[in-house]
Image (tube, rainbow, N blue to C red; front, side):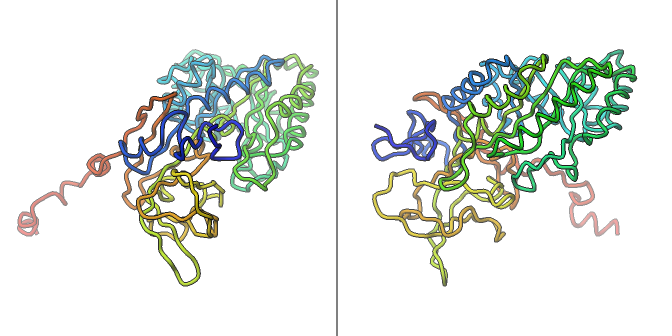
Length: 439
């Protein structure tokens, strides 16, 4: 029987005959063909996670709008869209990606605190399902754009319920000091203003209090506040028909840490809170759907013994996976060749000229040598999508696996492509002699 590479019972990254595989494809085979580092995604995991999410919440018959910010690769989006997923987008670029991947516009929700008038106009022309408005000035701007285009746009107002998600400060979005949404106490006035604007059709309330939540109580508190708001507004004559409950449900990145609640527990809580509200309910899952569907595969460059510790230097760097340096995030690292020797403590680092280019500190790892392959687990969310070309390192490829087949779904950026993004101004392109003569 294949051995799981991680603690997740749903992992499709397993050891087979001593080799870590993505479904039925050895990761070493992919590495031999595309080189390292690379991201690899499992279609089976994506499909199973989506179906499980839908099944758990079936009593509410919700709309599931996948949050593209977690992973915006077209192949990932299309895999979920073919199962019926909509999209939650936060920029015109993400909206264009959703449409290009086959998500029907009537299943797309546009969120985000800083939509420009150009982005609003594009969303209106595309005919998307709803825009989630996050401030009073945005309401005014959106109404102006809608009127100019002869439209009346369906809107949900995102409220800030001042609920502590008890997660990392940089991914908390539902406290009063966060930039997101309209303060809960000001929300009734915002809805009344929205109802008076000629280009706005206020239909619902949206809420999203943060990412990687591993407790149900913050969700419960926020959703109860939403229910109270909807009932109060209805009593005041504003007939709201939609509730967007956002995303944020976490995953278990490591053993020994608080485990995220099962989706079935989350669904039972949501149903108990909003089940009798008589509204259309939507959710915006991201990480929960895609994180465990991806790994980042790298090669060991050197094993370096320092004065006090051993360093495993790999060819993946912080520009390829920012989460550890940005959030102090944890990812399990495992050898692609199943280990037989006992583990020892090492620091796993990358080649970028930053001390922050560190993925794991004093982490147990079996002995490895230059050329050996490592896999960073649960990197399907906020991995490739946050990558950069820092240190002039080209973007790494993304690969998708289905059964015993794999395809490159984003090729490795070449140095020529990287350099072609810059333009040298004419005065620097002139021959040296000509410039001296002009002087």
